[in-house]
Length: 213
Image (cartoon, rainbow, N blue to C red):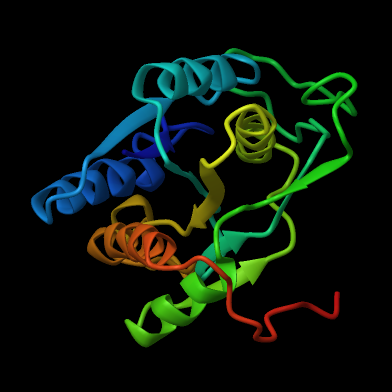
């Protein structure tokens, strides 16, 4: 079973493309005969992980792909690492703004994604979808969920998971904006490609996708 998640709108937005893409990708994968479900997470520290953990318990997936919006990024970002740090530049949807707090008290400093991020990168680029491997998921609710996911999966051997950031979709941007965006159909297909490439991969590709800064 495959679980995809996205977030409710935040920061004054009326939509969040991560949820739209997760919902639509799950439907696309079901049409291909795969057992896929999508769950919307609140953009709230703590609550988001609790909703995610409840979904893990209910669905018992073999693969989890969480998605979030990274407005301003021009590409699909396959996140490599989650850090044990909440440091909110803006409040979440409940008004919480933790600073320098651990996601999980006593947890390790970081977890790596168990998705084959290099294989997924190659598959996305082959499909004509702009993509990158990202070395930071930030310190807001996206990283919070990414870390919470990997912390939970340590108790679920055999279940793979990770996090994908998506850009704005064009409908979110005012006329004349020069902010980068990708069509929702492309965001949806990107998540489906990540799922398909993960299911077909046991060992990740060894290709360069690092950063100098």
